[in-house]
Amino acid sequence: MSIQDWSENMVLVELPGEPQTSKELENVVRHVRDRGDCGVVADFSEVTILTSSSLAALLRLRKLLDGCEQPLVLCAVGQATRGIISVTGLDGVFDIVEDRFDALARAQAVPKAV
Picture 1 (cartoon, helix red, strand yellow):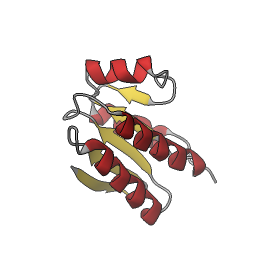
Picture 2 (cartoon, helix red, strand yellow):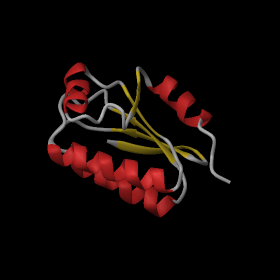
Picture 3 (cartoon, helix red, strand yellow):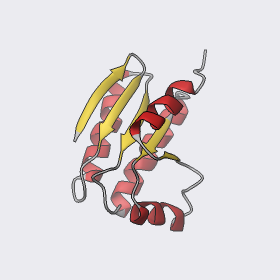
Picture 4 (cartoon, one colour):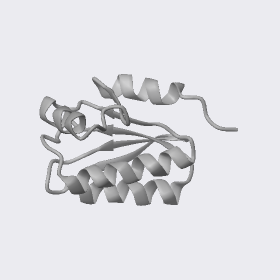
């Protein structure tokens, strides 16, 4: 995994597959807390499945970002992972796009709180 400070207000995360996904999502939560107000683009291209721990960590990240009105955009999410998100009823919670460039554009377009 890598956490890259893409811009002053955006972090790009390349997530590893399970079993490391939930641990790395927790690292992202800590990074966002330490950094302050910034949005997150999470690249799921290496993730083939999500465990309940990973979903819980993803929801914690969503809550943290909602609290500071920052975007969370998921990209390159495989069919199995999309299915898990859908079956759990979380498909309306996460903004999912096809690739990281679309995700970065979408996240940058979200109006910031003043």
